[in-house]
Image 1 (cartoon, protein in one colour):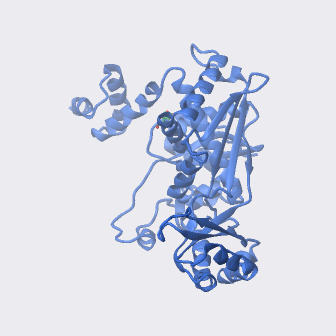
Image 2 (tube, helix red, strand yellow):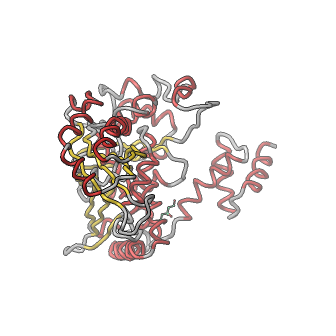
Image 3 (cartoon, rainbow, N blue to C red):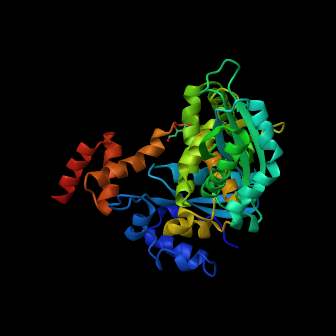
Length: 430
Ligand code: MEV
């Protein structure tokens, strides 16, 4: 069986890592697209069809989150990210969590929301009643506008109307908002939903005698939630100079800080997105959509709070949970067009958007614990600095073995800056 536990991967050369993967994936459908056989970069001609005014493409490091064991399945997780330590930290925590039985996830049905804004109705209540009396035919019309979705078992499933605007509100502030609930199957669904709400707009105008302005998907995908959970016995958290209990308690204190204080919550949640965005990007999904939905969900009770929760159970274990809206897909859009995204999905061996959503929140939870564990023990700078020093060495013109040499010297001198690195590079090259 394929494993995500590959000891020493970190210390290998890139070609050795690729070779290892080749062996690991032999006979699977990821094998034929592995690095040595196919160029994974985005061809400029494809890029030119994706957006406007193209002049090039933009590369990011693609690393592998290792050790992930989720719902009794192994996952090697491709992560596209520019920040040092993110991949190492996620893999470190995934290793601890796998010793505790791995992550478990719960993912709701994939229902996305389309919104239609109606203004200028004479009487909002009767306009609402008019829409609801035609609910069945409106749902049929929505599905007729995107028939392939219903054939796949998805489609528009329900419709609700919300009245917005208090008594005394101005005509700009009063409106009806129709919510169309659509099962988008394995697609993120933006195109499907936008097609459907645009198709319904003329009928909605006739029914309400109002004017429709906006017809658009809501990125607040609170009907499409994914939750990850881990339960860690304290001894697994022990680290140099800190008992497992001390680390566990530190993490719970850090959580309470982020639960109550928005200034801390933003940074805490940024650490969670450090794990989530790289997987969203590597799989060709829309990270802005996931970001926007996640932060709104973190403020769902009116105050912006920690996205995750950390507590102690009766046996003294550290219990972490992360639940977030996940508007993502495994078909359509860049997931199919970008060669790296295609490869990433094959490598993950993911069968559905729900499965991907579960993996993404597990990585987010791991990343969060990685940051908190470092913050409540030695701090994050030591880990950060060695990779940061390498980036500085590269920026100063170091190549091959010079990179390691210059980075080590920068750390020894405690002067991790480009000017110093340039001096060192110059003296080596002499
Ligand atoms: C840095 O990219 C992320 C952290 O600031 C997250 C946190 O503070 O929890 C380390």
